[in-house]
Image 1: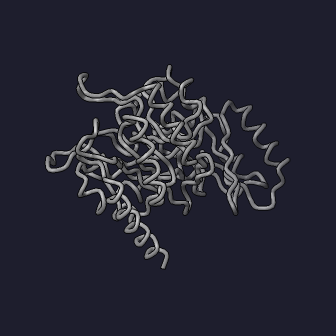
Image 2: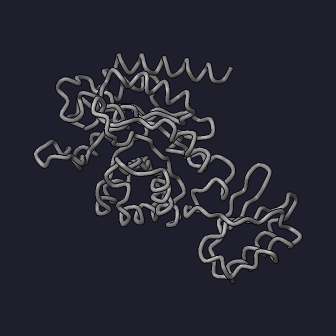
Image 3: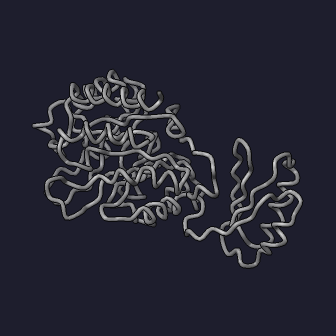
Length: 334
């Protein structure tokens, strides 16, 4: 249930209303927009007298929400959320590009790639330290050592760092990570999501390999229910019957998620296609679809990459993609 408050109502009046609503054993989420204040009621709202609430002098409108995701719902929060990642804003017109290697492999590799992507216009540096791999014999990442190398690259370039968490027990190691990524395989690791809800760090939440948009938003809800509302949704392709590409990029997810939710949406064309030559057209299409950002894998020598070399761009290819994305976004603004 949501209650839209009339314009000109004082903070004291709103606080009194919230105090009364909380006596009805519901949690109240406050969203103050440019024109309206919206109170979202989370929990068992059956005890709340909807007619009484509607007739209050300060209330403009009351409606029930059927979707199970409440905090992530645009009805709860009509204005777009802007997530601030150590000074880099994402959402509501703020476009960000996350770039870097699939895995942190060495000191020289991560610093070379970091410098190159920054020069081309990337705003955040990605790099896997803990790697979930299908085969137990594949490279699993440098783990804690990889995090240290990422932090060094951050110190040299000034770029905020993004890396994936695999286990809630690793959270102490992520103190200096600016944006914590929840990978596709962990999208429904609910115990991990609950722990991330207790943190104050922004979260990049990737859609699962075969999950619906509703399931993605319910995973975001797990984090938001814990008090952390700094979430960026990521469309990275889903598994279908198609075999020519690694996954099928669902670009319709971008406008649909924006219709359903106020959270920013970025697109990962690298994992979506699994083929480096498809990254540019998919990145351009994502920008045209209204994505708030991109996440692209870049390696200084893809042929020798220890992870996902086939989908990784060279720095020169990434620079070309960035020029194309800039032109698309400029065209959209005309």
